Image (cartoon, rainbow, N blue to C red):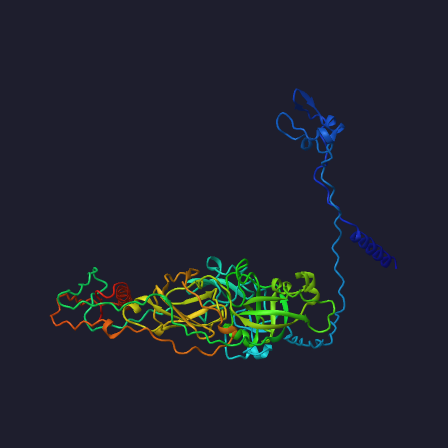
Length: 579
């Protein structure tokens, strides 16, 4: 019994001892040496001195460079902290294993794809030049996008401001229409030798033809000097060998004979309506550069539509518009007095929504035919009932020919301004003066408005390069023809030329006269016709050059270009030919 009690007591003592913390004794205590002296400046100091103002004095250094806080750690409060007691190691309890719960699978909620919003066709329209609406590709988005012409696009907000530049319009240094910048969707970029407004993803215009090297027909199979050798001046034809050649007489420039006007009664006025808009004196769908404010048409213009606009061939027509009264029930709207209710306007823009009897006048023209010529009355009226008829355009100056920006011998376009009489031009034809001097009578360069209503694009026969000076033939909407030689003296873009003539007034105030009778042709009499020189019988007296040097395609093209240019500027003394 005593033995068991003894064993139990020993176990309790050992258990208590094992639970008590074990403290490691430090090897040395943190004490300052009482006899330690150190010198600061001229005085000897002790740790007791340092402890009186420890915060300040413990920062100092002795003359030997020792820090006071290291010499006197106890006085400076720098003794190391006593180590924490180390507890006896204890085994962490082992917990019973717990299985992780299995989560139920989560099925994601279905995501409903958004339904695309329908395309709003109420204000949009189809366009070829990103500026003007067109109708021949449909009036809805789907019709426009499925049109056979790949160049058309959809304008979701309708036509942009008329001051912007449409597709193919010159920009930057080539901005001859003074527009405010390219229309939305277009950027100003280099295209066919000029800066033009083009779609940002279309660096090559599809409408203007790409420059093509001018083909040259060899006049005779005679040898040619190689263009890669030093230039050799072609030998002129010897006068004794060939009979002198008299160039055909060049007719004096002037109007082609015009038939005598047929007296016809004035036409009956048509009924219509008129609205007004801000106008565009610096351009518009017809491409006019400016609108005269002092001389005719005195700042009065109109945007027309339907058959009157005729895809741009109605541009320039002039109309007399008379106010009849308010359109509909508008008792506050009044026309001007008897002398202030009629205005003559020139068609300079397109009104896509207008029919042939709806005229959209500019603000100045609309205001001039309401009471007191007041802008307030114009706003009150809004729309007028009118009578109108086609009248003469009373231009007193000559017709002006204006080259489009970016033109060259490989791509030439022009504008025709200040046309008197019917005002509208039906046909423009050109002829190179060099070819006329070589006997060509026909005007073989045909210009039309296939690339837009604002300018005439000229089609080059066989895609050849054309050279200035150019003769011009104009046909107005009544079929009257004017011709002038050497009108266009340069192909530089934006250049302006005087046609040196203009059409007469409308015959008998008839806007649509019958086609004029055949015009008499001024043909020289037989006695005046030059006699063709007989073919030379003497042997060739020039120098024939040949070469066995291989020429690449570029050498050949340069040679042909040199030959063509030489022949065009040196007729008819001699000719350079190639075989």
